[in-house]
Length: 117
Image (cartoon, rainbow, N blue to C red; front, top):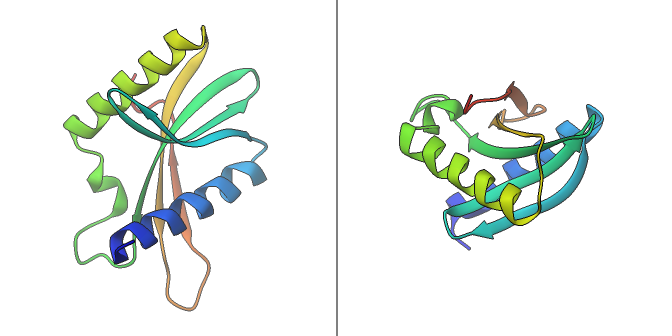
């Protein structure tokens, strides 16, 4: 596993804990579809949430959410639609969580809800 993959895994773990603390139930992680991978699948208030996690350890390349390109959002939406159809899920949305690793401090989170609406 390379450095970026390690940072990505750390961010996904941190984001999972973050949304669990907000009352979300984690249903799955790193779910592969023909359209790409879904980082986290969670549920809150009977809504299935497909979560994309973007992690950065510095702002040298910008904020984590700047990694949510149109292409990435299109893949995210296609993956969510595929998964929802395969599992007969009617009520769902796509969220993104930006995670910044702050040296010597706790991570900083920005939760963007319903990013593909």
